[in-house]
Image (cartoon, rainbow, N blue to C red; front, top):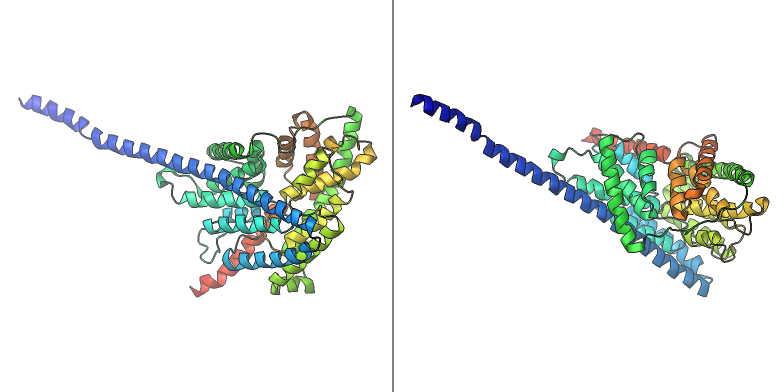
Length: 458
């Protein structure tokens, strides 16, 4: 009898712990799927926010352009006042939302763990400010884009999501920031492959294997959401490749040379304006940022009047017209857009440079077309210059050629796009430091310097 009880006791000792163990596994399984649902919901949210940003920016820009066509004097009044108001609102209610958004996301990824006085650059409040103020800046004529800001919007949403995820999932905050930023750029351009390349090349130098799954999942969900609202067509349609191999080689060489020099100069001027600008005008911008924004708005309005309004907004409509050989875009569109975008950036308004950079590249290609006897069908040259100028500005050649390839359905041109992007980016490195990492390093240094006195006083 004792032996039977002893044997039964041994069996019970093996069976009884199974029930709490099964309950623990069931709970972990539920937490795992809840975490996945939260993450998937965040990725879909990034796509919806990108669509909202795009729709609002396009609507306000169209209203401004139509009003400016009816009343030629309106930009001289509206653009300075709106620029000053947007800067005041940003500084008063949405600090951290100014600028492109990509350096802010990169700076947050470098945020020290014990930074007490660090002012947040990613939050739900910044999402609201970035979308509302950024769309308003485009809607009052400033040459800004929404693609860079969509990176900060996506990273901010994923930053918020991170606090809701179960700790047992062990998903790092920086991994979610990269996934959110990549999903934002993919949804904004409706170009999922570009989002993956942007994550690898710009936001994370060497992505871990576990992290790549998060990125692709976020991009797929955000991309599907964006495509359900904006369609799955290519942004700029298809392009026609003309000319022999020798003529294409000439187009690549000339595009890389011109766009590499122009893009490197553009990036260098942006870095100097943000980090190393000295003199009375720089002091005026620092001491009276609202008045400086109004002055920038007045200059943009004057430039818009001189150019017939082609420099207003992101420039995507003008780029589409150039690629489709429709409309009458003047030769000075590219250089004027170059100046207008620098003015808008220096004003301190929330807004990005991806779309304006593509427009500037298209304008440069439009000017180079007569030199290569491609004025009749310049789409191939325009696509090369778009990729080349964007690669020179960002020094992210893979992201640049993938963005253009997806936007124009230019897979047949992929080798030429790769070549011009790599050459332009290499030439730009001789002129300027990498744009976004340099600006992010400046933000980190500024935040650290501001946090130091607060830490000592605490």
